[in-house]
Image 1 (cartoon, helix red, strand yellow):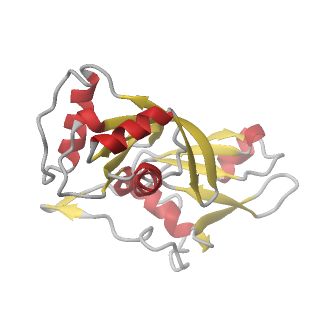
Image 2 (cartoon, rainbow, N blue to C red; image 1 turned 30 degrees about the vertical axis):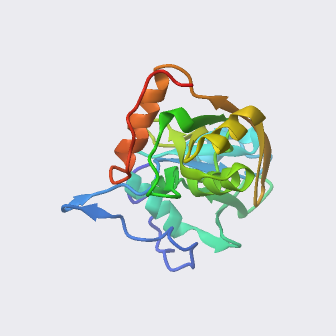
Length: 238
């Protein structure tokens, strides 16, 4: 999308708290708030790719009823959000097809701050007590993953959602660090977990952290929250 394409003066609609906040700055430099990849759901069933592109969608899968928007600039994502209307905590924008006029479709941006959540900053992050969770639904935020796992096993001190390096959009996997061995063993022994939150209800797999890959993940987590007390990363997980 070209910059300003979605800036149509509809920025006065009530939005979900936090979605319309100004872009953050640090040391005078602009910091991105959102992934440049945005999910759009509930497209009209008879919309074709050409019509979708003309209306709004850049990368559409009309037959599946959903699409992804890929923006060159993060500021365009904010413009899209400002053009939406909010209902029940969700964002919508109207799209027309040959037989349906102004159908509300859901716009689901990914806030970069939802990729990581520290539940207990006083606890060290230990790669030997970190698990990987596969098949995580992409709308699920790190704080929600942390709460679910803490409710099931207790002792969660950190949760993170894995994102792709370019667009910073969720890849469908996450990691959870525990503060004690008992909670960690309980989690990896389960092998599968039912993630239930709002509209999400999915059974996913939990994978134990093995070998030198633990050190990589440990360092990634520490780099995100450098103020957290940390232990020493080791490549030999137990």
